[in-house]
Length: 370
Image (cartoon, rainbow, N blue to C red):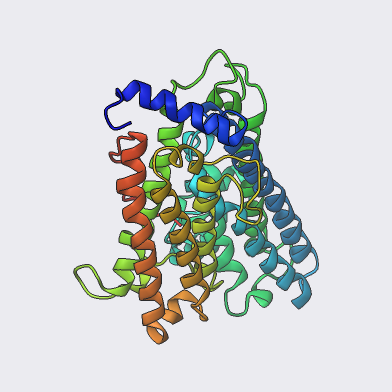
């Protein structure tokens, strides 16, 4: 057989597989199938969950301002945490509407400028949705501003009813976030005057669509930029692995102590995109980027799966809020950085190379965002 021409060897092996297996091997999915699966199973449901949780946050803020109490304050704080789950998880899918609308500057920019917020509240409070959208900078609005108001010492006393400027500002912030989240979800699913919903444009289900290969490349680049931001700009800087010594301020977040959970959701969002599902069902029919990697390299695919598991396990091992752990459990935060660095290397070299994705710099690469 060693002298058999290459083409004959391939035909012989294919015939042998058919005889042994009793049927022809199933064809590997193409990029269109993967895009449709990711969009229908991960991206659109994720933004719909964000819209729903944002509405719940708005209602919780309404209840807090109508009837300030410890119970309504705790409910509003929990609603804030709940909306950050789909928001942080969606970061791995920041393509299309969320970028076109520059929604990050409205929803959740970092750092939050508490001094400017206080000056605004003391002089000319922004108490309408239009005033928040058009009159304030990114550092004075979004989930970060809500975090500052809800988790501030003495928050309940300061939010002294819906007539107070502070509470009316909080309500306006909630209104902006709810309407923005709803608009993002709608752009994915609702036809526009200028064309089909972005879902159809992105997946090739309409006459007007992204060029073949461009959508998958955009998704992969989004993962590359996200892991680069987390590993290099946040954790490395916070741990003092870059020039200038440790800088805990490189980790976004405030008194809500949600940074560790936010990091976990970001990595889970990346895993969702790679697997095509949330990892709870190994037999899921959903397809992710993994389906494109397996035919090219089983080794790379398994390495990615193992590294996602290792990174999430390292995050789970951190028992304190991330800003506190930097001081009291630095070795555990270091372990998180190392596991994510492993994941970054495999993604940035093997996955990118196998898929032929060209990685440059995104519009937001280097920006400060949560």
